Image (cartoon, rainbow, N blue to C red):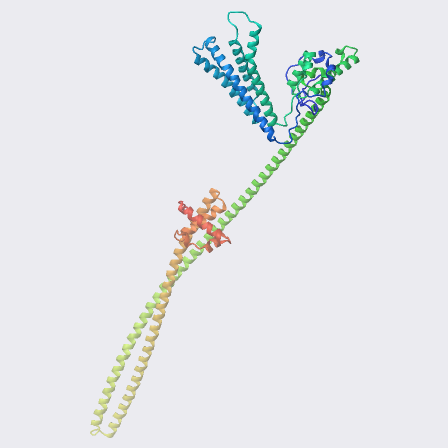
Length: 576
C-alpha cells in the first residue's frame, strides 16, 4: 500500500509522553542504530533528574524559608564576588587591548556588560515566577558570560613569552566564578519554574554512562526526545527497542532482505524519525483509510445536506412565491372590490345628485305655480278692495237716503201741522182725505226709513264681509309670498345642491382617474363636507360623517375629520 495522505494525528501515545508533531523531510532510517541498547536496560527503571512531577503537598516551613533566604543571599554574594573580580580585569583589558581610549570608558564597558547580564537574569527569573518564561533569554546571558570569561582569561594571558601550565590554570580560574554564577542562576530558574508550575512535566536526563558507551546512538535518542517532546527516557528506550525488534523480525521474515517488505511493513522505520512508535506506524494505513472513509462520508453528508438545503430553499422560495402571489391576488381583489364599491358609491352619489336636481326642478316648477297663485291672490285682493269700496259707496248712499227720509218725515210733519191749521177752514171730508193722505205718507215714510235702515245694515254686513275677504286675501297674499320666498330659497338650495353634486361628481371622477384608495376618497369627501359648512372642521358633526361614510365608530369619524382638516390646510380644493 502506498501512503498518499498524511494522517491528521498519530495513534494515541502512551500516557507517559506527548504525541509527536509532524515535520517536513524524512531523515535516514534508524535501522542503522547499533545494537548496544541492550546494555542500557538496567537504567530503564531510573529517573536521573532526581525529582518527580508531583508538587509538594504542603507549604514551606519556617526552616525551609530561612534556607531559601540564605541561598538567595549566597547567590547575590557570589554575583558580587564575580563582578568584583572581573570588573578591574575587564576594564583594564578593554582600555589597553581593545582601544577604548581611556580607563573610564573601559570601566563603563565592564559595567555595561555586567549590568546587562544581571538585567537579563532578573527578567528571566521574573518571567519564570510569573509562569511566562522566555526560553531564548538565557542564551544571550550565556554568550555575555562566555565573553566575560574570555576577557578575564585574556587579561591574565602571559605577554612576550610562551604559555605554561600555570598560565592555563590561571586563565581557567578567571572563568570559574562566572560559570558558577550561571549555574546557580539556572538552578534558581528551574527551582522557580517547579514551584510556580508544579504540574509541568519533567524531562528525564540521559545517563552519562550511556553517553560514554554509545555516543552516536545516544545523540540520536537525545535528538528525537527534543524534537518530539518525549520527556521520559525509559519511554524513548522502549520505543527504540521495539523498533530494533521489529526490524529483526522483518529480517527473519524475508531472510535478511528487508527490501522485499511492503511499504506498510516498512512504515515503522520510515516514521520513527518523526516520533511515531511501531504500533502507531503500523496503525497508520487503517487510520488513514478510516479517515478517508470518514472524509468521504462527511463529504457525502455535506452534499446531501446541501441538496436538502437546496430543496428546502426551493420549496420555501416556491411557498414564498405562492404566498406573495396569493397576497397580490388578495390585494388585487381587495382593490377591485374597493374600486367597485367606490364606483358604485360614486354612481349612487351621481344618481342621488340627479334625483336631487330633478326634485329641485320640480320644486322650481312648484315655486312658479305658487308665484302664479300669489299673483291670482293679489288680483282677488284688489277685486275685494274694489268690492269694499263699492260697499262703502252703497253705505254712504244709504246714509244719504236715510237723511232724505228724515227730511221727508220733517216735511210730512210740517204738512200735518199745516193741515191741522187748515182743518178748521176745510171741510171735514177734505180733512179726512188729507188725514188719510198724511197717514199714507207717514206709513210710506216709515216704510222708506225701514228700507233705508235695512239697506244700511246690508251695506254694513257687506262692508264687514268685504273686510273679512280683504283680510283673507292679505293672508293668502302673505302665504303666497312666504311660499314664493320658500320656493326661492328651495330653488337656491337646489342650485347649491346641484352645484355641490356636480362638484362631487367631478371629484369622484378625478379620484377614479387617480385610483385613490377608499380611505383617501373618504378623507377627501369629508374635506368637501367641511368646505360645505364654511371651512371649519369643528362645525362638521361626527354623526354626519358617520352617516355619509357609513362608519360606526366616532373615533374613525374623528380621524377622517382630522385628516381632512390637514388635507385642506395642505391646499386641497375640489375641482370646480
